[in-house]
Image 1 (cartoon, rainbow, N blue to C red):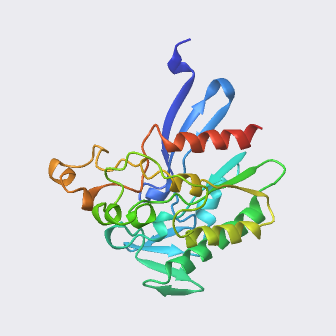
Image 2: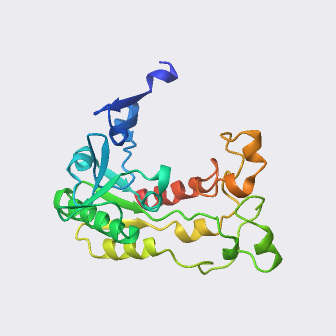
Length: 252
């Protein structure tokens, strides 16, 4: 048997018009295991009506249908709630039967998380499905968090950082998004394990692609103050630690 007989990789699309239904899956036939990535950056549904993307803060049926039969569910949301301009993933917000061009992003995130938590409490069978929520992944665009004096004024972001921060307390302001996550998960009825990677990741100002992701032109690389990626993480790198922690709580 060749190695390629042991697994197959598929990319299924339920709805060709929606990025939110794209589900790449890895099937390990020898173990009867399938691992799927379901892209829903807000967890709640986004409907497209006549070209307008509507973020439905109380709607999760479409996404929820894709999650029901899983034995292990790992959720995450955070950064996308803050995006504006061309990076914003919606055009209107629907909440309480009304439509909004915008609202306080933290309020919107909490509404969406409570819709998600209600779905978990209603539809997840706690006797067969384990639920995890990975906490907020921090960014490093503000050198005030790790530098003082001349260092903070010269450095604009994570570019040029080659060593992690030290200490045992959160170096910056504890993210308000995490306060919302903590509160929502504490109030859930179905046990949901919080994979808290926020603190350990905050220390790793040196772990981002910066200007070395391969997606930048020479001109862009010459201007790291504007183009350095201090949001995503290098692979291999910090996400390997996240995976090791997840493996530990999953099997031990």
